[in-house]
Length: 87
Image 1: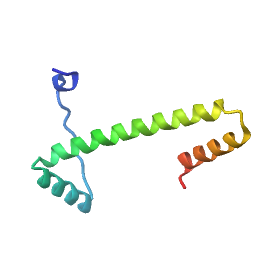
Image 2 (image 1 turned 90 degrees about the horizontal axis):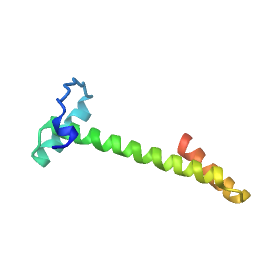
Image 3 (image 1 turned 180 degrees about the vertical axis):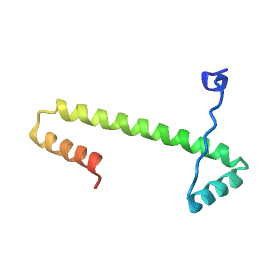
Image 4 (image 1 turned 90 degrees about the vertical axis):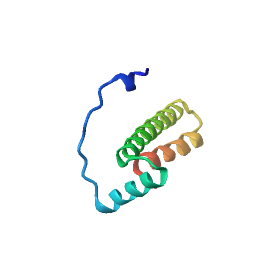
């Protein structure tokens, strides 16, 4: 039994905009799962995506910090700028 399975679930109330609520319901119905289970999966996926993005940023920042070639520094600096501020 994993730590997640043995911990007592925490109940949360979430209000979704109508269009998003409908999308969740359609996804749940298509996969034959409850709306709640779909929400849990989407939250887990979002948290993992956030962690991957943070790791990618830290790796890029480290490469930028370690770079000594001016053209490489410029390229990595531009990538960091896009990462932080978007396109």
